[in-house]
Length: 287
Image (cartoon, rainbow, N blue to C red; front, side, top):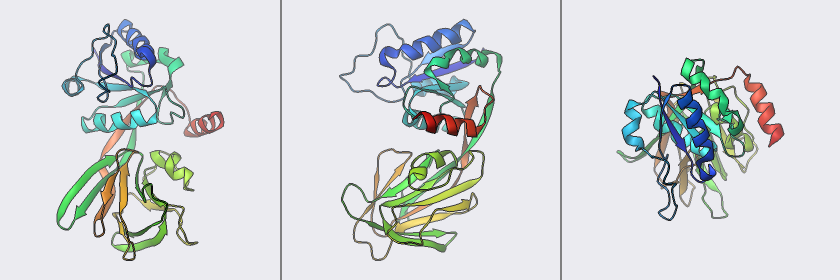
C-alpha cells in the first residue's frame, strides 16, 4: 500500500476543502494518507479540529510521495523538502499560474492513478548555491526555479560581476540578476527577457534584470558551468540573494555567490500525457 503525504497551504485551500476531497479519493482507492502542514501557520489561525494533522518531519521518512496543494510558491517550497528526502512530488494548483502543478483543483479524480502506479516521473535539474565570505561558507541552499540577486527596495542600481568557470561573462549595473533552471525559465527569468526552455534540457540561464547597457543579455550556459557572482569593484552598496522567491540573504562587498548544477534532482509526478508546449500555451493564454 502506498503512503502519501498531503500538504495543503491553509491560506490557499479555504476550509481545507481540496485536501479533504483528495484524501477521500485516495483512501477509497486504497492509498494511505497523512495530512501535514508544509510550514508553520500564524498562531491566530484556527485549524479545523476534525482534521488530524501529522508532523511533516516524522512522516517524510515513511512516505512514498508528497502531494502539495497551493500555488507555485507553495509547491516550490515543498519540492525542496521532498527532494532532500528522495520523494517525488505532485502539485495541485490552488493559485493563479500554477505552472509546476500537474493538476488543477477540479481534476482530483485523476489521483486514483496513484493507487495503480499509472504515472511517470519527470526529473528536473536543480541548482546549488553557496555564499562565501572569505574562507567561510555563510549560506547554502538548493533551487528548483531560480536564484536572484537584486538591489533590494531602494531605487538604485546594483553593480554585479558574473564569471563562468573563472572567466568573466558579464559586468553590468541594473536591477539584478536571475540564474535559473529550465523549470524556472517560465517564471521570473521570462519576465526579465529570458528564453523559454524545455524542462528536460540541461542548461543554466543567466538573465540580467534591466541591465543599464546594451551588451548584457541572457546567457544559456551548460549545466557543467560554475557561476560566480559578486558585487563589482565599483559597487557602493549591498545585494540581496533569494532562492525560489524565499527570504532574501544580504550579500556584502567581497562575498561570492557560487552557483552550479546540484547533485539532487526534483522528481515531479506526471499523471497526464501532455506536451510542454500545451502547458505553455494553456497557462499563458488563460492567465
